[in-house]
Image (cartoon, rainbow, N blue to C red; front, side, top):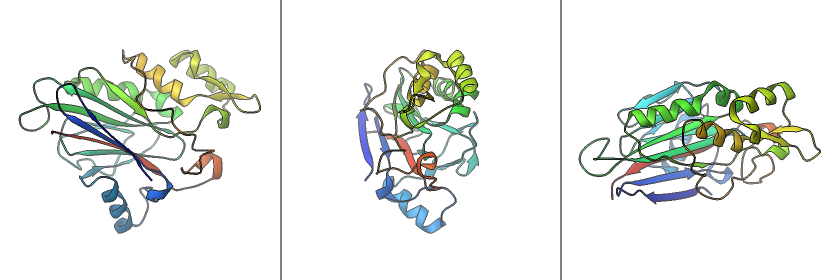
Length: 241
């Protein structure tokens, strides 16, 4: 079942993250509406901003819970409490980011936070979706940014074209180069996310253990590994104690 984490920030705001797995059901956005709504509710009872993802750098800024739900984008950012941001994945990296906001933030008085959810496939990483999310967080007053990386395909299972890999390495750093189990060139998505963040000045390592490989894990859906159309999700929101 879902991996749930809650983290209290230095200013007292509390950030919640959820990474679902097959036990939580298919969260693909084209699913039957009532069943999908119930699966979402079980993971997070607050209104969701979910996206129709296109592997680009599109981003929405959420000012009220559930704003922009169903819009075409690959990242969302908010400083509003109890506004759930979600991305759907089956091999791409779900990246969840958070930071305290000085002097409150969002709605009302008290400690505040800004959070973001990013769908990071290789095309989105090349387009700069991570940098756009960090920029939007800072515009909303984000302090020091922390992040976590959910289950995604590992380089051992992700053979990648040499020309595309060269281009990504030039943009995101040589650490993105990996190798498959049989020695072919591969992309390390986790290293690519870290490289994209480092280019924005976010150098903190990811919180939590290394993510599972979706292609080899029995707990996660994988399009590339098993041709599955189902999706798991990464969800983030914050509230006040």
